[in-house]
Each structure stands twice: as C-alpha cells, then as structure tokens.
Amino acid sequence: MQSCILPCSLKNGDELIIHWFYTEGQISVHSFYDNQDQLGNQNQHFRNRTFLFKDQFHSHNLSLLLTRVNVQDEGRYKCLKSSTKGSEEKNINLNVDAPVSDIRIHQDGNRITCSSEGIYPQPELTWSTEPPSNTVLQNRTTVHQTEEKLYDISSSLTVPDEDS
Image (cartoon, rainbow, N blue to C red; front, side, top):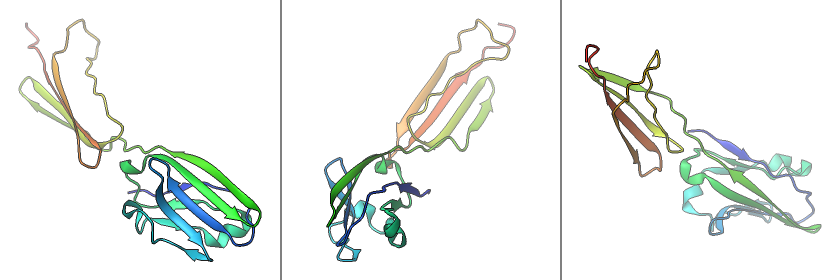
C-alpha cells in the first residue's frame, strides 16, 4: 500500500484551525486546533492513516499525509484553514490507480487463458495475433469487482487449429 500527500499551502495566522474533509458527504478526515490534532470526529475509514506536517506550519504547509491509500480514498478533498487572518480553503482531487502488476497466462490445448487481479480502474483485455490475421478471435472475458473496489479480469481464447 502506498502513501500520498494532499498538498495545501495557505497563509497562517495565530490560533490556527485546520480541517480536512472528504467532500463526498463532508466526512471529517483530520482536524487540528488548540495546537493539537483533534481526531474525535474523524471518520473511522481514515483512523490512524492521516498526519499533518506540524513542523512546517510556519512555512504555510498544511498538507495532509494519507497512508495505506486504497480505492475508496479516491475523490475530492477540502483543506479548510481558519486563523486570526481569516479563512481560506483549497480543494484537491485524489485519483487512485492500482496498475496491473502480475499477468498469468495458461495454455491447455487450443485454449489460452489470461488473467490478472487487483486492478483499478476497470481494465480491458484485448487479444491479437502476430502477424496480424483476418481471423476473428472468439474469446470470453469476465471482469469482477471485489469488496475493496479492485477488479479481477480473466479472458479465455480458443485458437483454431492451423490446418482449419
């Protein structure tokens, strides 16, 4: 699992208040006020996964470190800052990818199966021949979404005999 930084640079003032929200439903991601993290209202999905760079507040860095990023984290976030100098906000879009990391190919006679798991966004699989031919390739592809919102894909192709 990877980590990411949601960037936010806003001018600070005294009595700094920072709120990070996941904007789909105004879900509380991380709050800081009274000179400390305030995580009582933090959504459980983000528990023990968010950190602010407190040592960098003086240089206006209010960025959020999000650890163990998963597909459910994808979406729009809002950094909201209040201080004696007023309020400001910044919106950040987080796109999550889980690229293909392992491809399995299995051949049983004239049948070839290609599969991979744990992919995001939804994958597509295309068969081709080398050299290209006019033969229409008949394949059967299934895509399944897991509870973690990742995709598994499997495609089988029956290759015609060369003498047909």
